[in-house]
Image 1 (cartoon, rainbow, N blue to C red):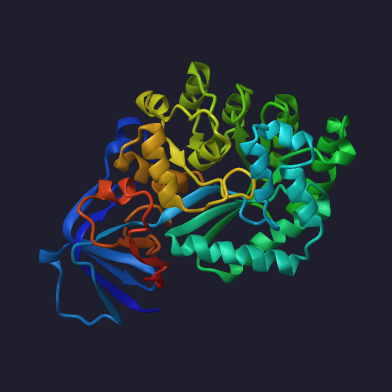
Image 2: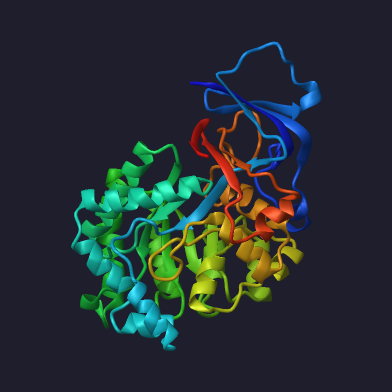
Length: 415
């Protein structure tokens, strides 16, 4: 593979010389940097970096990139998406405009059940081609690693279809991919009034097949008001643990559901959404290794209360920010926009936001050993900005890309 030198970098951000795996509390405001810097890439990996004055000039590179007046930072890591889906659901947004809630739309057969119908009608190849368009989109927007959930299939065959598509995406793109079996996302119409029977289907039929094909890294449950209860969640998590699938939980989007506590009890890698978080939830996080993850796009799109990000950070917790890219509640995988929303609506600083969308989301995907920061030996997953005055401007200017070039594993994706 090619050797690359990025030189004359105005500021190189996100340096992780100490091998830190996450940033918590006041640490989130610390974004280690070097001014007037260079970055060397060999065989797709970061091989060296430092100040230009220390660069040894006696070698040739396959590619040299002059980053004069530009910033370089780690590419985004998106630790919560549903980007493998069929069709779209923009018509439901009219119902939202007219005042229907997320739960009301779901009860009318919309929402997740609408996406489930579309999954049943599409072939695996067609689903892959639709999803590949979104994959290319997020790569060009600076995302280097992404967690993708199933959950719109609901039934065994359809869930397996989704997970096989995720496996193909992993094999055919330079993105780092983690697959999550979203075991309990919604109850199919056929099981209305028989939710416990559906949980049994998940535990006794779908989960063993997912595990047998090795299609998932994690397991997830939508543990929230109107969806799945704490006992149902616990039953699924216990079964998933037998197959080595660590939890990643949808929690407390719609109410104080107990989802945070069950996530922490079962050592979930992350608990996501968190619009409803109080002192007991913060204490549960403090006693765990679970990463609190907020999804500003979903809160914006559904007009939900904003997760108390400031309260969680000030309490000493780590915090991650992900996109929740999906057709119903966050139809965007633009991580720069998500971090801008976190700054605007959640009162997070630019430094906190960038840590939340790189090293902390890498933790929430269990990939901090290979990406999420500028560290020798990590994949060369970096963003080169356009000329900008400060790192704050990168997120402050929320309507503009400001990304000049993206490198994934040392491969130039777009410019």
